[in-house]
Length: 288
Ligand SMILES: C[S@@+](CC[C@H](N)C(=O)[O-])C[C@H]1O[C@@H](n2cnc3c(N)ncnc32)[C@H](O)[C@@H]1O
Image (cartoon, rainbow, N blue to C red; front, side, top):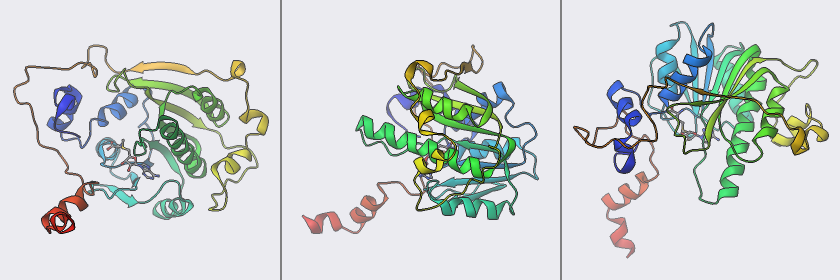
């Protein structure tokens, strides 16, 4: 979480630091749980794209002690009580094997993904990478979820989002698009909440390095379904969740007692780490 600019006047950002959450995203999961009781009756949980770890902190605090929580991210994560942290790529098939190994072959009750790629600034490319990340999270979930299991994932409501809703509706009893109050309304961000996983009869999903995401889904979704005409694409219920009287995530709160608060968890592998090391070793000067 940044320390300057608009962030420091955002009350969710400040509240996260005061309550010990590593990121303000913790409130998004808490508000989604308040609305959908996501944590009821779950034991094996996977938190995809989990760093710095505020969702895993929430899960670790809210679930019973005998739960198994596995957090996966490309970035290394500082340990959290009762959470197994894996530094891995969710788009790589080996990650599935590693997760199953930690569950001793059992399946998961709940999988959440708050994944976001590094933004390039090229809008079309960013939207494409984000959609691929959601499909990878869904692919893993199909291979890992128990029948009846729950899946939630961050989405950006772009022009083709109804296609994703159609695909999800083939696989879950209920699909809802939810916007927690802590998610800025000026952002296209929302979450798909998918309840009641229904594995397709006779299909044994398998991840394979030589198979693209499209190949994987083409086994269950025919070309016709991939190409659903816009007028017949599925719309899903949209729910805004969180207490109406709670903090406004879009407001800028001025006149705060203390403008900056120290971070709960310093970045483990920030992109600027190498530059700092080079400066310390005088390498910048030497190159000039
Ligand atoms: C918004 S952050 C997640 C915040 C987290 N839910 C929390 O509460 O602290 C998005 C994360 O997605 C991760 N990510 C992006 N692509 C990934 C991939 N292919 N595999 C694993 N993690 C990925 C990034 O490294 C980043 O840490």
